[in-house]
Amino acid sequence: MGFERPEIQRILDLYGRMVAAGEWRDYAMDFEREMASFAAFRRTAERPQFRIEKRPALRGRQGMWTLYGEAGQVLKRGHELLGVLAPIERRLLKVVER
Image (tube, rainbow, N blue to C red; front, side, top):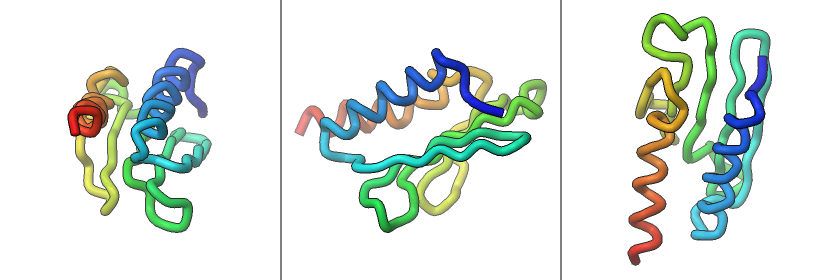
């Protein structure tokens, strides 16, 4: 299981903008049989600030995309990657407005 090229490009584009804003410093990707995940960190030695997970088996139910927060809580689920990334995009707008 993995990310398709347009999916990873969209995620890495957001990651690059968050790095430029000084919010994120590191990332990790994990690929397993049933899922793929991308985790973004403020600092390397801590839990990820956000984790984006793709589980195609959930495509027919809540959607295959899930956004998790730092404490592991589900922030957003959906069928489209862009909708699931929206809370992070809004946060980026707030950072730029400072």
